[in-house]
Image 1 (cartoon, helix red, strand yellow):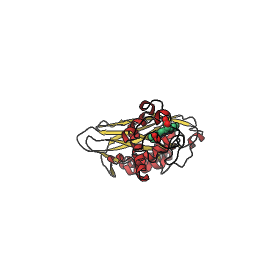
Image 2: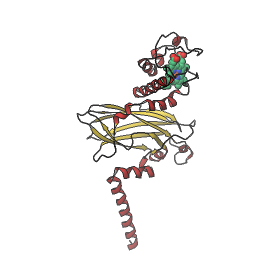
Image 3: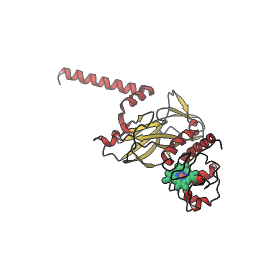
Image 4: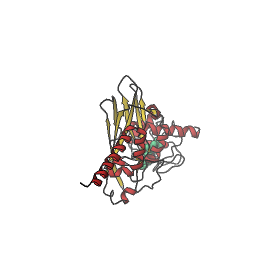
Length: 288
Ligand code: HEC
């Protein structure tokens, strides 16, 4: 091999070696590196969903892992969902510290296929932060994401119809920027996003759409908004919408009151709790 080739190769190895060292050296640099390049299925962090929702759908599967030395149980609260491209969607993960001590963990994630990572945009997440979970406590963590419609326009990614988001929690060794996972208990804000993506097609706060208005629904009598054409079943149900009843309703309207006309349910308890927190907040704003 000519000498100058050897020199070139040596230079290349040096450069790669330096990158690897830098990346493993500092979490902050790792963040910068991934945010800048979207390398290896790394997803993108954005402030808001500015993309228009399209008719095209994609299936997202959720996968979770914990490092062997991290005594946490960490699971997705929904295994798989189908969403429209551009549609802002909240999903939830649950983590529980099974040990007797507070522990700081750090989540990393990636998307497969790798080439889809660039289009998987997260608005709110526990992606790169170091997280403290108190001994024996349990939290439900939201991730709000959308898949950029540009994915369907790009020849290289047009064929992608299924993506998998995998999260792995590691035990943090040198922790900086620690945040406490208990902050995810305050969920009205996430509930508002869930309301927008799961309920707003049929419900507004202050006017009837397909369904009745919901601004002051907490502690209201079921089937009681004047002029709204309720099903006979709901009009006659005699229920008060306490938070407990709302939770049962959202888990399965027809299971709770057979014959009602609301055709959807929210399977994840954390998602229901967030929506109810949001509705409570709206009821308080409305002053009733
Ligand atoms: C596809 C349309 C649709 C979606 C989506 C939907 N609803 Fe409904 N909802 C309805 C309809 C229709 C009714 C009236 C049911 C009846 O009369 O039997 C209703 C009734 C209700 C009621 C009872 C209100 C009252 O005045 O008694 C509540 C509470 C409610 N919905 C909450 C929600 C929430 C929260 C979501 C989102 C998680 C949601 N709904 C999503 C269609 C929908």
